[in-house]
Amino acid sequence: MSPRLSLALEQGGLVLPEDGRIAVFHPRLDMDLSDLPKDRVQIIQPFKPDHDGFAAQGFDCTPAAEGPYAASIICLPRAKALIRAVIHTAASCTDGPLVIDGGKTDGIDSVLKDIRKRTDIGGPVSKAHGKIFWLAAAPDMFQDWRPPETQIVDGFHTAPGVFSADGIDPASAFLVNTLPKQLGKRVADLGAGWGYLSRHLLADPKLETLDLVEADHIALDCARLNVTDPRARFHWADATRWTPDHRVDAVVMNPPFHTSRAADPGIGQAFIEAAARCLTPSGTLWMVANRHLPYETTLATRFAHVDSVASNYRFKVLRATRPSRPRR
Ligand SMILES: C[S@@+](CC[C@H](N)C(=O)[O-])C[C@H]1O[C@@H](n2cnc3c(N)ncnc32)[C@H](O)[C@@H]1O
View 1 (cartoon, helix red, strand yellow):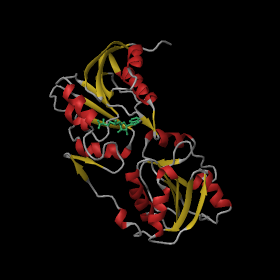
View 2 (view 1 turned 135 degrees about the vertical axis):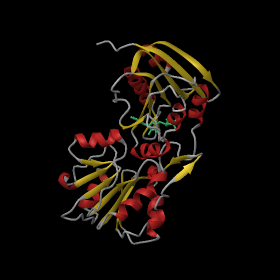
View 3 (view 1 turned 90 degrees about the vertical axis):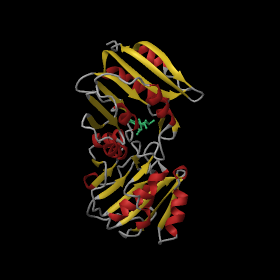
View 4 (view 1 turned 180 degrees about the vertical axis):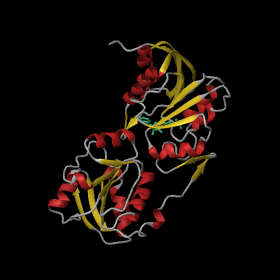
């Protein structure tokens, strides 16, 4: 866990209940949860790579809360817009203490300030550039932090904290304006988000199957509402590990370029590797990226032909055909 939880348990006066399940909301994979009784912990983690990482350590994991819980520990999520929604959910399914842990850069100080206005707290304990504090949860304490049942933006369902929750991403719109009308019978949308690219692709009557692959469970739930065509298949999966039943004719993607808060072109490069694995030998990858992101070298090592089909001052659309198989 964070060193703050250990300190709060050892010296800070935090007492977790002896019985009952303990929920841990949105822990990051680098967190050490060994201070907690593993057989009583349920991890709530909608991001598939982190979910699978904790499951591999033997934790009971779920993408969405399955209360009731005797206590809940909330690790402030990366997406600020999710913080209130997660605290609301945890409070509504927890009978005992609600423990809130976060770094300064996660916004712990403003959460602490907001909560102090409505109830007494235990702690805070400060350590490692962050704070942990706790409170007695009441189910209706955070009713006003409940997220709207549905949020419709630009005609699409989105949700707090998902990528581009406030509207269509301009890079994705640029890609859509560049794509030919037909891409093949079988297509995959890697990192499909709430389904913007997929809904566009389904306008092609010749398309037979479309695989939407997305790691964020909340975004994929939105995509299910936005994309109701029976040719669509939804996969809650890490795109860098996913492979289709049959290789596809085309992959379309606007890959993520951040892990945590830092820009990381490695994740986009891993998406390119995955796309090459998913495609038929004559298949084509269509991707959009910020102009400065260095994807051409990776593309050139995995595809026979690479070209830039469109660009403006912010984005470029790259097309890569004929994937090569990696050397063994
Ligand atoms: C730049 S967004 C594009 C979303 C959507 N295609 C669009 O055009 O609006 C990248 C998406 O990849 C998802 N993502 C991040 N890491 C992933 C992974 N390892 N596997 C699958 N999806 C991932 C993010 O949750 C996000 O929805």
